[in-house]
Image 1 (cartoon, rainbow, N blue to C red):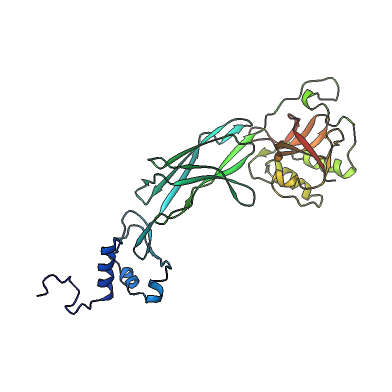
Image 2: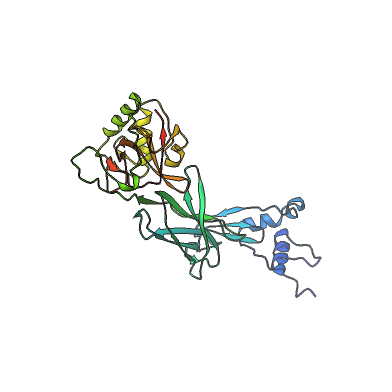
Length: 324
């Protein structure tokens, strides 16, 4: 009489909560995991089961529930782990050059490609991350971004996730942008001529005693190597050098060239004096900073192939700030 009654359901129509939930979910196209958590989810009180609230239970990698990798279960849904990766064809470039980033999004321990997912290339803004490019992953889960960075910074690939795929971010990549260094021409006099920046320091102003001492303290770091993100005492990047030396004179500066642009007072190029800060701009953004040394020279930490020392000012797109 009851030959077609599903196993686990009594003839009276009353069965276990887990069996009833399984029948209901199968009929609606849901997913039932053969784990104790599935029965527990199916027996949730009505006030939770109908509230729309998501309930999660972690499943370890390689478990019988999902041998392809770690997942998170919801009522009737699998949320699979994703992995974002990022590479770059040239981690060190000269200013004005382009670089190509290759990103990829995969699913689970089997590294299956995740196609048609929205991916973001983000760069470090000093206090957080900002999106610089977006793209959809192709059939292989891959994206390509071509950029022309104006400053040394860090990048990562970010995926926000969807209902069934977890969010993920890649490892961080540092890209170093080397300023174009122009060797100072030989001259019998004390002046170093750079035609595009001839106006700099043309009024011949002398720096204050404190500014001259600031420059002298910076010159003591001559010969030390450039390392991105370093702030002394054995290595520096451009803003790290300025921050390190300014601290010796009681001035606390942030470790970022564009942020240091907010300190001191503006000085015209013609009125620049030794010990003033010189900022190199791309639009209104300061991507490099040094210490003006008089003539057409500055003391800075330029790039990984050039140590701290005196170098020719190689651009006219600069501004000066007087901090001492």
